[in-house]
Image (cartoon, rainbow over all chains, first blue to last red; front, side):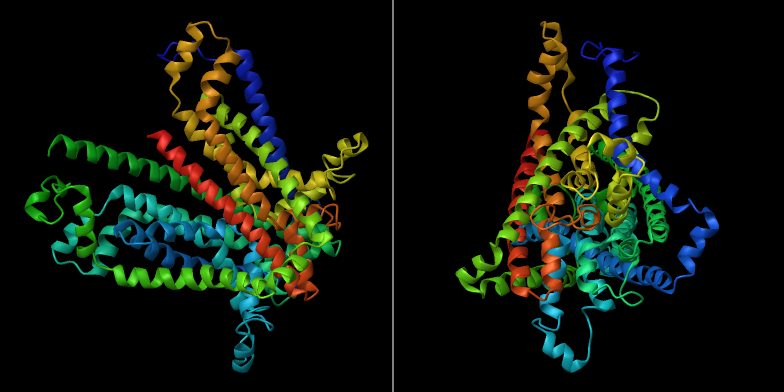
Length: 292
Length: 295
C-alpha cells in the first residue's frame, strides 16, 4: 500500500481479495455470462447461418428496417425537446418549475405497458380520438406513428436529464455576454450554448438511441405485433422465440446486444470528455476567483 | 479566456448583484423563453399529462364500485402480489449486491477495475427482451447454468425465481450507481479514528460506515423497486406467465388488452400507475435528502 494516508482502516489483503472475487462473481453471473451466451448461441451454427437468419427472412429484414426508422425519429424529437426543456428550466425561474422537472421523470417510473395502454386509449379504435382518426383514415395505433409515440415517451427523460445539470453548472454568464453584444437567439444557441453542452447532448442522444432501439413493453402494446408490418427488432426476437425458432431469435438478439456494446463504448468515451471539461470549468472558475 | 475581463464587455452579466436578483434579470435578458416554453409544454402535455389523465379518467368513469370490481379480481390481486413480492425481493438483492460491488469499485484497487465498472452499465443498454431471452435459455434444463442448477432443484426459468433473476439484472446498475459516489465521499478519518480507538473492522463498518451510506442504499432500493415494478420485456420471456403463480401485473394488463377487456386493463394500469408515482415521490424526497447530506 503506497497510499500516503495510514491505511489503518484498509481491510487485510485476504478480505480485499475475497471482496473482489465476490464482486467479480456477481457481475460475472448477472451480466457477463448472459451477455456472452447471446453471442455464443447466435453463432453456434457459424457466421453464415447467423447471416442467413438475419437476411433471408423477410419479416426479420422488415423488423430491422422498422427499428432503424422508428428510433431516429424518436431520438430527434427527444433532442429538440431536451434542448428546449433544459434551456427553459436551467435559464429561467417561473412558477411550477420544480413540478415541471418532476414531470420529466414520470416516463422513467411509469411502466412502459401502462404508457402503451394510455396511447391506445387515446388513439385506438375504441379510444378518445378513435372516431376522428377513422374518419380521417389515419392509423396511429398498430402503425408507425404509434411506435414513434411510444418510443418517444419511454426515452423522454434521457436527453433533458443530461443537459440540465451541465447547463446549471456552466451558468448563463457567457450567453448573457453574447446577448449584450447583440447576438440573436439562434446565434447564442449555436455559438455559445451548443459548444458547451455538446458532449452532454451526445451522451443523452446515445442513451436515448439505445433505449429506443431496445424498447419492448410500450411498443408491444401499441404495435399489435403484426409480423412484417409493426414488429420492431425486440418484438421480432420475442416472436421468433415463441415460434420455437430460438437460433433465429438469438441472431436478432445478438445484433441488439452488439449495438448495446457499441453504445457502452461510446458512452465511456463521451464520459471521459465530460469529466475533462468539468475539470477545465473548475480550473477556470478557480482562476476567475483568483482575479476578480 | 476573454471572460477574464468581463466588466468591460458585459455590464449586465457582472456577478456583483446578489444571486437572486441576477437570476431574475437573466429571465428578462436571455431570449427563447417563449419558444422553449412552447415546445416543452406541448411535448409534456401531449405525451405525459394527457395520456395519463385519459387513463385515470377512463378508470374513474367506471365509478367506485365498477373500479373495484375490475381492479380487485382474484387474478388481479394475485398479479399485484407477484409483482410486488418479486420486485421487493429483486430490489433487496440488488441493493445488497450493489453495495458490495460499489464498495469494491471504490475502495479496492485491482487489475480490471475499470472493466468491472464499465460492465455494471450493460443492463442499461441491453434491450430487456434480449435479457429475458438469454436468461430463459441459460436457466432451462439444458442451458449453461440450468444443467447444474435444475438437478439441484433450482428452477431459474419459467418460475417465480426467474422473475426475480431478470429483475435483479435490470435493476442492479441503479443500486450500484447511487451508492458509489456516496462511498467515494465518505470521511475516512472517522473510520481511522474508530479503528485507533479499538473498534474491530466489523464494528467500524456497522457503526461508522453503514450509517453514512444507508440513505444511499435505501435510495438504490427504491429506484430498483420502481424499475422492477414496471418491467415487462424481460419478465414475459422467463416467467411462464401462469395466472395466480407467475403472472405480474403488466403481463395481466397486456393479456386483458388482447381480450379487449379495456375496463380491467385500464383499472389495473391505474393501480400500477398509483404505485409508481408514489415511489417516484419517495425517490425524489430521498434523493433531495441525499443531496443535502452531501453538502
